Image (cartoon, rainbow, N blue to C red; front, side, top):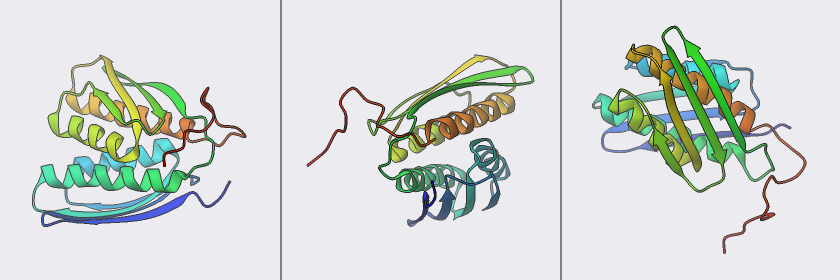
Length: 182
């Protein structure tokens, strides 16, 4: 399948974010962001999801940048995914040193997020991404004590889970067939 790409721009008084996403990529990325940890996490997400991503983010403070990157990336994800049938549901466990994180997603357009994360800014990132992307997202920390490792294992798990959940399939995976909204 080709063409599952999107470009989304978000500009507010506080931020400007541009994301170009290719769901059928190879995990290449180009991220320009002043928050080095966020840059590292977005690159990690793209690599583990095997999505190609170009992202530029600038803004007035860390909270606004992190939130708007999540919203923009979620909107690009939703737009690139389109309406074709996909596997929809996936769960992944990823260890990173002391940390073990589990992420489950359902691409169902009933956004919900239950996030176990030791850093409120990154918990907010995951919630904002899920709401904007239209995902049900659960992140559970099985164990860990180093916040960096926990957050990174969560991003890696999310990447693997959305990679699996976005794989095309021949038919819709639902007992409702197709839900149409008028």
